[in-house]
Amino acid sequence: MNTLSTPTQPAAVLEYRLTAMDRCDSCGAQAYIAAEVNGSELLFCAHHGRKYEEKLRSVATSWHDETARLSESV
Image (cartoon, rainbow, N blue to C red; front, side):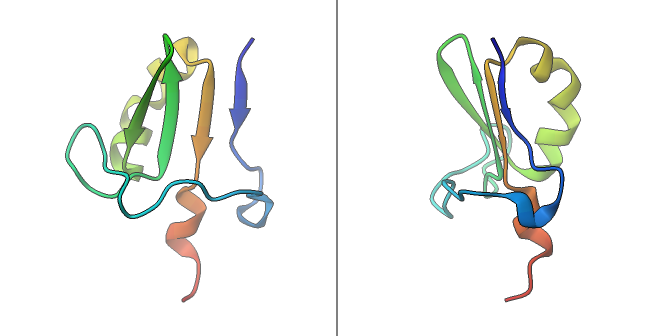
């Protein structure tokens, strides 16, 4: 069973759990996407999350997307 927490609207994000300390496993930038694959959590920046999204979603047991935070006003 896949649990996906991708919001349909930017305001639909219920919980922000990734912080500035969470870094992309590909490049080290701030992570905005977390995917659970085979019991391990993989973290990605928006760029790498989108790059690998199609392949990851097919095997991920969960997908947590906080990229809507990138367009929030401060």
